[in-house]
Length: 184
Ligand code: SME
Image 1 (spheres, rainbow, N blue to C red):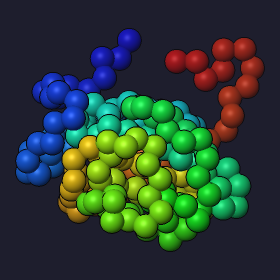
Image 2: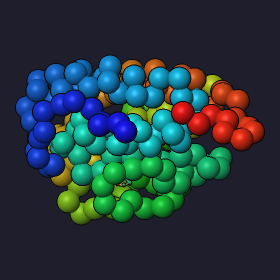
Image 3: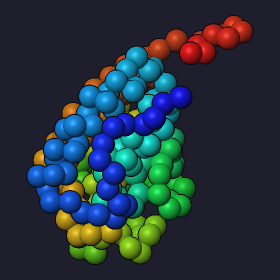
Image 4: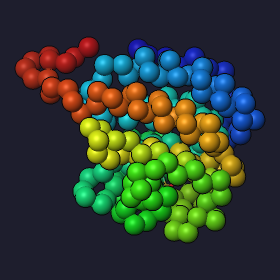
């Protein structure tokens, strides 16, 4: 049975100073990468990252994935936090903007972002990062925070690197078959 990751406990909703957030994220990186190493199923990687990034980022009130399920449509994937909206067209919200442009969206004040979708009225800032698998947009990581400026450009760059490494082999593995295949 996994114990999650080893980090100091911080109360949910706490916005640590940026330097402490970056140090905490850097401390978590090798543990997160080890947890998903060799996993080729994208949803298994998403679910594990949603869990471990939730532990790593105490400032988040929502942490999870929207998956591309049609040409210009996202559907919610594994997440932690309050209930998120189920579907987001590419034309809507911060997640839609990320999917449309395939560029990270760092939003220090969601009230200043035209079209922001308020799944939780408490959310004040947001970070959304695109994930490509074999050159094609597969999903976005969505992080919400009840504080303004809850995420920094440095955290965004670190998370972009983490996602690129964690999803490198996703979607490429064979589907196990036969009795007991793939059971660890
Ligand atoms: N705020 C997002 C929608 C997703 S939820 O917040 C979980 C957006 O504007 O795309």
